[in-house]
Length: 288
Image 1 (cartoon, helix red, strand yellow):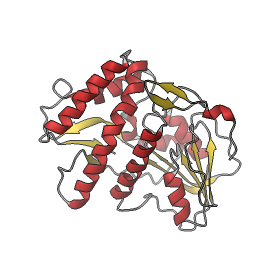
Image 2 (tube, one colour):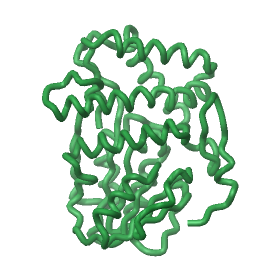
Image 3 (cartoon, one colour):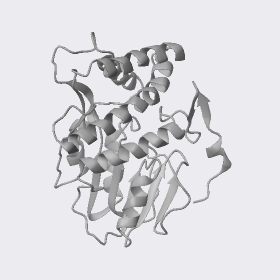
């Protein structure tokens, strides 16, 4: 869809590029490094679900689909390709989606935290990896409920903190990675982002009116330490994702919220990378 030139007036900060529309709302870059990370992460999500894009029991000839916070648009594009009956709309703060897309897929620059003004209800609403995006999860879920047809589905795929390690003696006092996670959670809390909440959204969904609520928890191993070919591949994906997510998360959050300099962030992240490289006996994982 056509957009005004102002949404391309990106903000540049600490060597990274950030969205212009609703400037400052989402503390994560939208540059090429981040786009590559999101596309890699997409494959990790598909691997987690044994190749599937979703778990909801939607009809194969589903009609009207919304992807909230679509990022590079890769989920919306692949969903549109797999469901030619569907009209798929992806929304995001950043116009970083490709123009060569299936005819049943389109994108809209929109702030999902604002009031939704869609003309017709959806059969299926999907969001993924929005842990650092929503300050008001209940409002998002309420708006999703109000914009679904009776019998429609909302699917939320997301991470949640804390970061975990198989060795209980490893914590934020002796692990740079665990310290990064703790600092990220505290920075989020200061600006109204609850990075623990996605792990327990059941009551919020129920309060909004949803029924047939199902929750399934997965572990993403960081590195190829877990048993089985699938988990080893997932671990490699997760580690690559984390390596790029470290600066994507910390450069914005730690400088803006904790008051660190760019140099302080870079030195600290170097210690995190060193830990992941030198301490392979520390088996970390992420919850999702």
